[in-house]
Every structure is written in structure tokens, then in C-alpha cells.
Image 1 (cartoon, one colour):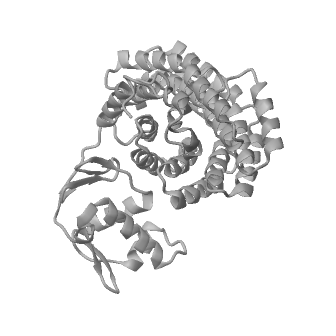
Image 2: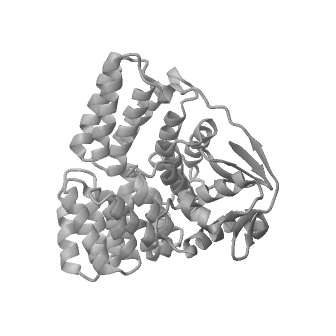
Image 3: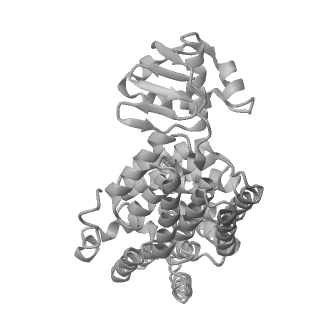
Length: 431
């Protein structure tokens, strides 16, 4: 069902859109809005909302009030007229809504199975391997996707999977990111040759363009076109969020990440990143809550712990930051970025000796290092020169985290320093 009301439109699959574009909603906020729209102006009791939206969980009416507050904020100055309070009883939609039945789309090639059973099962195995996220298993996922393509070279979903796994290796810095990014673009282009409207391939290519090649305007164009084709695919929304971060738009990026997590709350790919983006956007209360929730949901995923470490460190919650950083390293000791985040937490906590020792260990690794997180450690240690060198290194090797450098509050001390400002990309940079 698709709804048009006031200056907004809402589809349970595609989300909420307003005059300025897409508006990210939390999953329960979207469920509440859908419930009010379905009631078509009739009052919905608080008891019904608790039963339907929170599925009978033991929460207070305060949770409903907070959800209503967030929805009203999304609707702007007229929010209280869009969602009206029936005092003591519940809430109702206060504007007329036009309902339209949506016709289910046929599966696009990017999401369709192969007629080859071997190809289909190999791709399924590849995604299972990639979800474990270690360098070895990401490499195995690539091999499995390549095997699927040997069995069916026209398998669009396998080309998209292959591009995704290369992009994941770039994002995790377990191989030189420019090499992995180029491989991701090559696979995405193969998918687009088979299907010019392949939304995941466009999003993946756009992410590489914006975050590795620093062609931000071109990357955003690819990502936006991807969402125009298929707006309810979680991976595309998350990649668009990262590209928006490259454009210097952290609030919009956080909204896209929230939408991505709402579309697929069982994926561990973006849940921790949402917390970091909220922190970059200045919503620190929501950031630490999201980081802690991600760790509870995915206790064995190192990136969730790493993001909690980064957010907690930024909020001077030093013991929590160090504990989370150590847990991330324990889970994935062969992933350099988690070591960089722990070094940052130690440095910001005043643990100079421990931080310097860990920095030396990270520098000894043969793989690319997470320059941005180490830059934050150097800033905390009072060494701005080394911090800028780390940022320069991140740009040179194509680290996708480089685009955070001019937004990250942990690097605020570098802003205005000529050597740092010269690293801002020019021309193609749209931020």
C-alpha cells in the first residue's frame, strides 16, 4: 500500500519521502506511522499501538510518546497537525491520506536465482562466508562467487555479490583498497552490461567512486539512480549513506543508515556504522544508545564493538571505549582497523604508553592501516604532524574512511591547519 498525505508519501517498503527527499525512520516509528495511516483518521489507542508496534514487549507509554515526537519532527512545523493527540486515549492522523494499491514488482535480475543449481548454491555459500567478515572468509566468498559465475556467466546476482565482497575487503582494509575498489567496479560493470537497471551494481560503483576515487558527485549520481530503481534494498541505502558522508552531509547519511538498518535489522553490516554516523552528526545520545544496542544484537561481530569504542571514546567514556576496543581486537585480531580504533581509545584515555605500543604494532603490519583512526590517536597524543601524515596516507591508498576526516570530531584540532586543509579533495569533491 502506498499513501500520499500533506506533502509526504509513505510506502512500508520504500519508506517516507517529503519535499526534500527521503526521510529516515526507525523501524518502530515506521510501523506506528503505517498503523495510523491504515486507521484513516480513526483514533488508534495506546494499547493497540503497544500490541502492534512493540509486539507486547514490556515498555511504557513513554516509548510511544518518543516515537510520536520523532515522527512529528520528521513532518516539520506541521507535525502536530499531521499526528494529533486524543488526550488520555491515543493518536490519530489529522490530514487526509490517499491510498493506492502497489503492484508487486517481478524480481529484478539482481535478485533472481540462476537456472544453474550449482551457481545458486555457490552464491548462497558466498554470502554466508562474507557474513563472517574475516579476511580469509571474504577471500573465500570471492572464490565462491567466481565459481558461481563459471557455472552461469549471466548470473547478475553473482556479479553483484562479487562486487559486494570486493567492496567489503576495501572497507575493512584487509587488502589495498584501491585494488579492491577497482575489482568491485569491474564486477559491478559486468552486472550492468547484463542489466543496465541493476540497482545494487549502481550503488556499489557509486560507493567506490565517492569514497575511494573521491568522485563524490559522480558517486552520488550512481547511488541516487540506484535508489530510484530499487529504493528498498538495504545495502544500496547504506552505501548511499556512506557516499553522503563523503559529501559532508552526516545528518543525511545517518538517516540513510537508519533506513538501511530498518529494512534489514538482522544484518550486521551497517548497525554499528549507524552509531558512528549519529556521533558525527552530533546526536551523541542516540549514537551511544545505537552503539550499545548493536553490541547486544551482534555480540560476536567485531565492527559493532569497534564502533562502540569509537563513539564511547568520543564521549570520554574511556573505560567502556577501551573494553569495547579490546573485545573487537580479540574477535578479529587480523583486521587492522580495529587495532587503530583501540589505539585511539587508549590515547584519548591518557594511556600513552599502551597507545604508542599498539601504534607500533599496527605500523608493523604488512596490510594497509586504518589511517583515520590512528590519526585520532596521534591527535590525542599531541602529535598533529603525525596525525596529518596518517590522513595523507589514508587518501593516498584510497581508504574509504578518509572521507570521515573532515567530519570526525576527533580530528577537529586539525581543521584550519594548512597541511591538513590541503588534503581536502578539490574539483570532484562536492562537500
